[in-house]
Image (cartoon, rainbow, N blue to C red; front, side, top):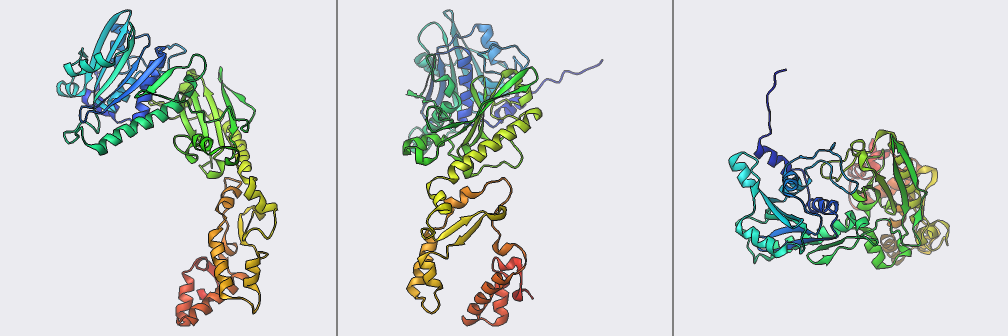
Length: 491
C-alpha cells in the first residue's frame, strides 16, 4: 500500500502541547509525579523571583536516569499508554514532563545523576521553532548551569527539572522591582503548595511518607474525608467489578460546623472552598486525579446542602482507558457499566449530607420548636418548599390586630422580617434534585381569592398615591408575581 510520511511540524506540535490548559500548580504536580515514580524521598519545588529571569525548579533525590533514559524522558510520547509500567509509575501518555513544561516556560532543562554519572539536556522552544526540528540540546547555557550547580541535590543520584523564560513573567516589561508581579508570582507558590497537599496527600503520610517542600515550606497533606475526626460518618465501602478488575468506592459524610472548631472548619473547606470540594474524589495509584465533582451524574449539581458529602473512588491504573483519564490527569469519565452504581452511592451520600444540615440546631427548632420563636416558618408540604410569615409571632399578631396597629409596630415587624430572612433553613430544606422552589400563589394561571385580595390592596394603594385606575392596573400587570397571574388587572 502506498503511503506518505506525515510527521507533525515541530512548531505546531509545540503550540499544541503548550495549549493543553494546565494551571501552574497542575503542571508542577505532573513533575512531582515523575519524582515519586523515581522513588524520591525528598522533593523540593523552588520559586525564584528575578524579574524576567525568574525560574521554577523541581529537585528530587530519586534514582535518576542514564543518558539514554534522559533522552527518552525528553522525547515527546516516547512511552505511550500501552507501555508496561511499574506499579509505582504515575505516568500514562509519556508527554507529562514536556506538555506541563511547555505550558509554563520556553526553556526546559533536565539534569539527572545516576551511579555517579551526570547528564543534562535542554529543550529551547525558540531553537525548535527557528530550525523546525526537534533539536534536543546537550548541556545548558552558562546562566542555567549556574542555577543547576546551586540547587542540584547532594549525593550521587537525583534529578533537577528547571523552567526558565516563564510564560507571563519573561517579558521585557517585567522588572525585578515590580512588586505587583512579584506578589502574583509568590501567590502561585502558595496555590501550588495547597494543590500538592491535596493531590499527593496519600504520599505524605505514614512511615514512608515523602518530604515535599515548596520554597522551603513543608507541604501539609489535606485529607478531604477528615478520616481522623470522630464525628465523620462512613458509609459501607463497595468493590464495584469492572472487567477483570474492581473499583473501590467509599462515601464519607463530614460533620457540620457545630462539631468543628473554626480552624477545623476552615481546613475542611479545602483549597477550593466547601461548594467546589463536594462530590467524588478519584484516585489512581493513590494520586488524586479529580477533586470534588459529581462526574456528570444526571441531575446532580453542586448545592450547599450537599457540602458535607465526599466520596473516594480508587481506580487501578490498568483501567485508565475505561475511565477516560486525560493527558493532564485532571479529568475522568466513568465507565457506562459503573454509572448506575455511582449514581446510587452519590444519591445516598447526598441525602445523608442534607440530613446532617437539615436537623442541626436552628433548622430543627424551626420545624419542631416554640411557635413564638421565629418570624418565618419554613415547611415542605406536597414536595414544595414553602416560606410563610408566622402569624403566631407577637409582632405579627400586633400588626394584624384590628384597629390597634401602630406605625411603630409595623416598622418593627418590617425590620424583624428583613433581619431574619430564613436563608439557612431554605438552603437545607431542599431534599431532591428536582425543582422544588416555592411558586407564589400556586404558580401561573388564574389568581385565587388570596392573590386577588393582595392585588386589590396594592391597586388601591397605587390609586391613593395619585395614579389613575388604568395606570395602577398597568403597573400591577408588570409586578411579580401578578405578571404571571390572571385577574382584574390583566384585562
